[in-house]
Amino acid sequence: MSVPTLETERLVLRAFTLADAKRVQELAGAFEIADTTGHMPHPYLDGMAEEWIQSLDDEFKHGDGATFAMTQRASGELMGAIGLTISQHNQRAEMGYWIGVPYWNHGYTSEAARAVVQFAFQELKLNRVYASHFSRNPASGRVMQKIGMQYEGTLREHFVRWAEPEDLVYYGILKSEWQRSADL
Image 1 (cartoon, helix red, strand yellow):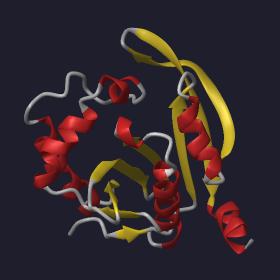
Image 2 (cartoon, helix red, strand yellow; image 1 turned 90 degrees about the vertical axis):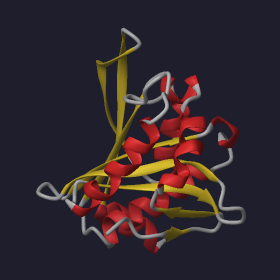
Image 3 (cartoon, helix red, strand yellow; image 1 turned 45 degrees about the horizontal axis):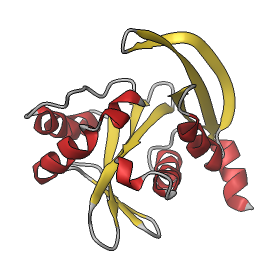
């Protein structure tokens, strides 16, 4: 059992396969990606992509997460990843994403995030989706704002990346808020 396929106007969000490993390593291996994410290793060594991809089906089967390969609808080209870390007991999930540098500033992540939030509320029956970004990465915050998430606060120097404390800016959306915006 793996994540379902979600489709948007320009994207297909699907399960990762081992055939994606080389492209994952290529895209995720860029320092710019590691620098703007909390847990992306750098350098991104051989075998890391395969290990990560192999962990995803179990994560979904156990209800702990749902990670999608973000691909272009027209070409099938893999551009990045978007997913949810799920807490069923608390009816919530944390959304995280990364997209390869060549695809920045085209609205792909916002489009994918809308579909994943809809999946969280309609299919997973969650009540809340939240996300965070480093304060020095406002582009990630704009994705959250575009999909209707509300600013919830900043945890000052809450995370250490590259031996430097980072502020984490949190956004969230409730199912009731999402439903109201979907009705407009």
